[in-house]
Image 1 (tube, rainbow, N blue to C red):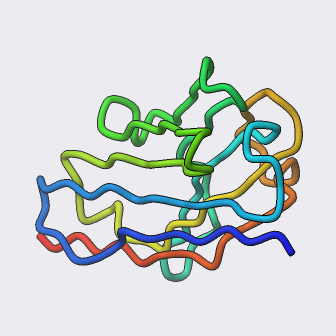
Image 2: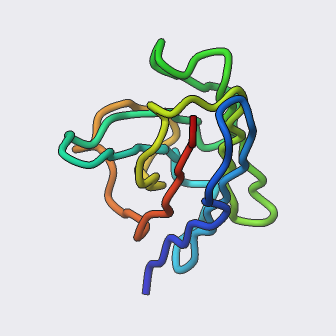
Length: 124
């Protein structure tokens, strides 16, 4: 059984930081590129970050570039999202996802497995 479980969400003031974690079980973690997405109320889900299977490639949209950092620890089957300088517009449910293959991707359709999401709320 494949499971992705996110943790680390919460309430933080604008300018603060949070680190999200996501653990993959039931598959060989190092065979999967990983991604983070988010969905705010009333909006479509959007891409936040991706990392290749061995971590050599990362990619971010302009909205989070320079503030968010994705990383992974293949020995712990875990991907992280370090979020700094948070803004109220970062408020959303954050999802991690796994895509078979070695390359990172921003395309939702490429991801096979999804976590249940963790809420991040940034107050002004």
